[in-house]
Length: 463
Image (cartoon, rainbow, N blue to C red; front, side):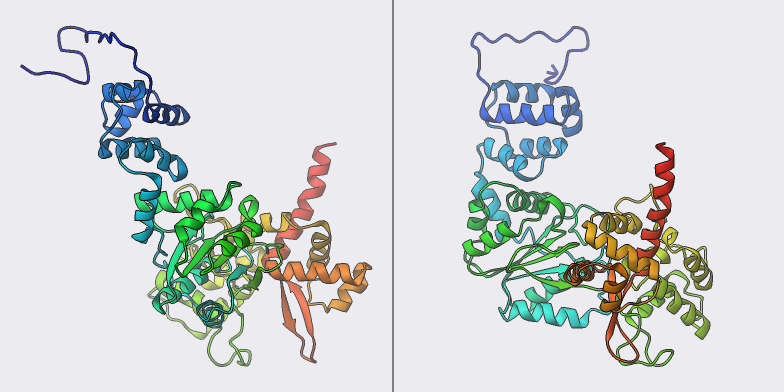
């Protein structure tokens, strides 16, 4: 005789079960029901997604079963997409383990260790030595890598993390706070996603930091937070965590500096367009050109890297400002266009080259154009005014010139220029006769000018 536990028999409807005594939902039952309703699933849909029977789910929610197996809890949590503190709460309610035990076990197993790099670090050797050296020597407890999206902050931070671990700098914890593409987030997995999302909940929320501080403890630790931007950024919480954990060091990557005293900003400019100490057209190619030539070699292995190809790549790197992500996105068009053709298109308008080739077909591909528009749109009025004025001038300008043609107080202009430099929207250049000048990145200039062209059209459309 075959007994069917999950459904009706073949010849008659399933008999209704009767329970003489009412059973109060357990803590696990309430947590499971709340998570299911948040996910917008019926019991039948959750059963289909998890492989757990409808009857088992119903019994758990009603309190008829109060202690599910570990495997049952895992299947239900994954089907509900639970991460972070919500996953921890469901695990704890199962009665098998406590939150503290779960997290500490995962932490000791290095479930939040840095991921492997997807690409080699090119042209950042000096920055790597400075940042990693300062942290390993204990000269700095908190540093922030600041710069334009796509400049390579995540890749540099990842290299720092691996060097720190290799040199015996203690535990290294990697928290990928940025959800946008272009970062170096660890691969998705049960352990890492649970621990890192729980730690981010504590670090970026508004609750007490005691649990996170207790997890880190007094062990020497480097905490790397990749993408500590926007609403989640709170320098005060970082400083408080440092005060609680005396052997903790923090490295964050950001697009805008934290306005908090004690957080040293390390601006990361785009890759140099000329090799250090090299005369124009002579010597070794610049880091930006080396990176783009590598893209050409991989995409068009049959193409010989002649002087004409190198010249076209050099010009293309200049029009794309040496931004690594811009070079990567432009290289996506190499199967269709030669370097010379790409250079012609960049001369006309480089912004279309920043659009992902596989838009809509490949998840996680960054839209650098949108990121730059966001960086420009998030400026303060004084910074936006100075950036627009520099974009219209089209040639490097000394600080005194900027003050003169803007007609604004010197201190206001200097503050605005300082903010633009930290954000990587402008770069400093050496003048032939001595002194320095600032100029807007070519991609930023085209973004600003495109926004100015759209503004009158939008105004006319609203009339």
